[in-house]
Image (cartoon, rainbow, N blue to C red; front, top):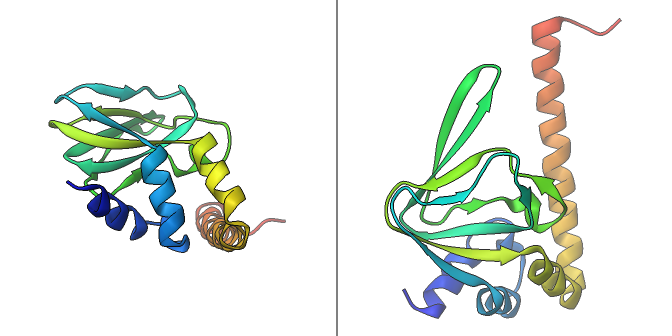
Length: 153
């Protein structure tokens, strides 16, 4: 895959689709490309997270363990893993292992913040989009809580 193809794929993915081509290009130039062998560990649930990963090829299994048992989700080529880790300090909510030979782009929080600092207007648009998604998710969670528990008294 060429550098321009990497830039094109990343620019079609949220939240990078809100950035101009120059910003996405800077992210791709500054990111670290990492090859993973099948079943290689990318990170473990509970690890401190300082970056996001964009899956360029292959696929990564994300496994989360909770009181309801184990849940597995697959991130295929074109998926972004760990968007929140590019913004703030968080813990990994799941473990990640390559399902097959894969290539990911490691986008550090430092690189992401530096790019946002160089494109303040677009950074403001990203903040607004993130706030809207957070409000929507909060409303959906409240609706689920209401259906499960009934109205708050």
